[in-house]
Structure formats: C-alpha cells, structure tokens
Image (cartoon, rainbow, N blue to C red; front, side):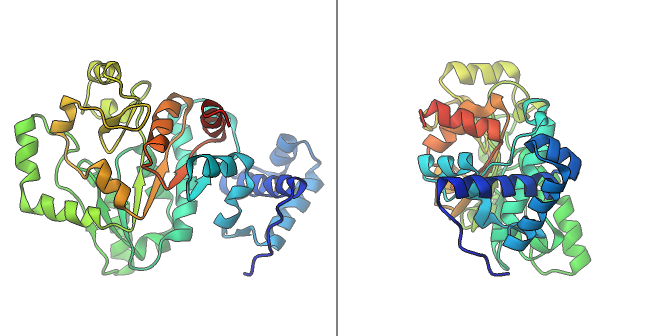
Length: 325
C-alpha cells in the first residue's frame, strides 16, 4: 500500500501520534475500543473512527508501519538526541511500571514489529543474551523467521532457538541457526580460554561478526538481573561490578555511564563477541525497558552500541530528562 506523505507541523504531529497510539493499543496490546476510548478520553464512536483512519492512512497493514513510529514525540526526540536510526516507544500502559516480565513481554512484541519490517530474505540475524531477546524471537511471525539465518552472539542462548528450529522444519527451509555450544560465562578463566580456542566456537564467532542485524538486551546491575537469575553471577559479584563503576551490561560485558568497558575479572570468563565487534554490525537493535534499567540504557546509548532502541515510554522520557532534552 502506498503511504501518504506525513505532515510535519506540530498539530499534525499530535494527530499522527494519537493515531499511532490508538493503533498500538488495539492491534498490539489487544485493548477493546471501550478501553481505548477511556484511555484517551474520547467516545467509543470516536475511537472506532480513529481506528478506521489508521487503516485508511496505511498506518496499519497487519503490522504497524515502522515509518510511523517516529510519530511518537518521545521516539522522535530519542532518535534525534542519540543519533539513532529508529526509536520505537510503545505508548505507556500501567504494566510498564510494574513487573519486569510484563514489560519484557510487551517490548518483545515491539521488537518483533520492527524486525518483521526490516529482515530481508537471506539476512543473518545475530541473537544476543537476555529475556527481551527471547520474547522478541517468540513474537516474530513465522514468515520472518523462515527467511533469515540466525547466529548467537554469546554462549548460553541455545534455548532461544527451539522455536526457530521448529519453523525451519515446518517450512523445510534451508537456512541455518548457528549456536555457540557454550555458556555465556564459564566457571573458570582457564575453561573459558579453552572453549574459545575450539574450532567450532571460533567459526560461530566469526559468523556472528558478519551478521546483518543484531538483537540484544541490556542488563542492569540491580533488580532482576538476568545473569543473576540464571546463576552465572551472584548479587555480590554484580554489586562489586557496580562499585567498580559499571552501570549495565551488553552480551555480558559491563560498561560505565559513558559507555566505556570496565576492566573486570568476570570478562575473562565470558564467551562471545566483543562490543567493538557489535559496533561493526550494520543494524544493532536493543530491546530493554523498566525504570531500573535507565542508567544501563543511557550508558549503552552514550557508548554508541545501538542503532535502534525499543523501550517503554516511561524509560524514554527518563532518558531524555537525564540528557536535558
């Protein structure tokens, strides 16, 4: 469907943002027209008319057209402030301020919306570490999964590819999933060094470095840190990393508020590509939210590790406030 030119005036931006907000609530979050009407303070009939306008304008066509994501003012400001290719900021729900698992599930739907619009047949998708990565992969439409190859960027993500392998079998696809046959953190530095020296591990890492897209999560050092949940790092170890200046991690690599990697013993037990390798991947999509992760996400943005950010509206506003925008 051809898209009409998007208006740029302030009033027109507000109208576009309202349309996108309504489309997201209805088609992604599954709210009823009554729910939407109450949420945006209009009548049910008006909510229905707004949904019809979304369809007529081409904003909605099975997925929400990614060209309209920047209609959200927060997304536009994030994109401009941090030099991002895209910032996808779903409109806020009450769950965004509650349990992290609910936030991750909602962000996974947003990450899938973005990737489905950008994955091309034959592309290689690099898979990072974290719950939002798994949530995004599970939300991807089978057609999107079936047309790309995947490769893990670190160890410890073998469980994520079960869904992908089922799709490969069902569709008799010839594309492959390459997985590092290791944990993300080995029990000792010596074991990690030995595993990194294995030919199969080196082959997968080299494929990872040549990925067209990377899908990554961003970890915080407090709250429900995934590394701690899976027993790879203790709360005490994470607290020690924080004392050393770390604010978050990507792919198990910890960095400070400016995005610079912090020299930590835990890195010598880690198996995966480096953050400099990640920077060279053409399209790095970070999916992360929850107010406990604001410092971690801000450090990742300042470090220039992301091309695309998928986060919650509350976190987006907090990031802009921190930067004085």
